[in-house]
Image: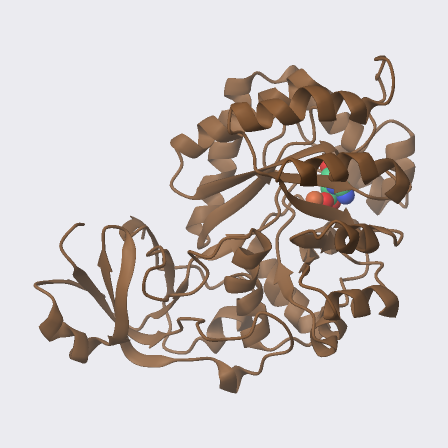
Length: 409
Ligand code: NIG
Ligand code: FE
């Protein structure tokens, strides 16, 4: 699509632009263009405005039929969709009263998925990512972060990250890879010195040389890595120029402080965050990413999203799609439900899965429908944007557009 094309009209066009990154938002702040249109060229947005006013500016029009609301494509800033096997057994055990941490201690949990992921070939992992990413795309998610972390050796982490890199080439949605080699300590570690020393010296350089990831993550938790244990890993990651993100405060606190200390882009989970951690977010630029899918999968409390926003923090919402704690993987459903329990406005929910989520990935070319951004957008078959969260994920997109191309209808 090299010639500019006007796409529309949309009953309501919500560009999500001009809104603050931090703090609470009310629906009256949402910019909303009635009967809007988007001019697209070479995969990017050139102009947005009232459809009728834009018609004279272009030779080509792609007409949209019926009542449609248009929003930026959703950004899922935290997933683990590269994995082998299933953890349906864990889910049944949890529902029978055994806790996530008890299952992990008994050799299940993350380690179980590590075992199953190691058995999979790189091609099988690629196929799994492809299948899951397609479902996300059809739900309106045009950018998906994908973590490693079920390999837990240099070679197995490389297998995962190469699978993510390859899957990205055949994928409509953009996959943003993250190295999570510090997910838990590998139970079979037999090398000399600590496991993380090997990751730092042997894996980090390959992430750079093969361009496999520019983001590094760790699970900071008593059952994984303590704040002290993780310091050298994040120290080295920072020296090498990786963006840092942290699995923080899921069951116990400590991770948020690590995130602040290492100037992380985001701290994710935060179900256990207290007033102290909430103030840390209010006073920093670290994005607080809520993962309601993990709360729903584990039957735990939700991240204190309302308090984070009221204190002035930046709140993104992601699916955490993974085989253990968050097998559902439906971002819009989960964000809508978080809104119900945490009393979030539509503006806060939608910001959390668009421009605030893009910020959690340090991406400035998406998440709003501003001119110059990627022409990634999603439409819903309604004339009122409030219907989208109201149906809690059951109102499905009528079309999805990636870089100006309609990829799903
Ligand atoms: O974000 N908490 C740590 N990691 C994942 C869970 C991974 C798993 O259970 O397989 C999470 O919830
Ligand atoms: Fe996670």
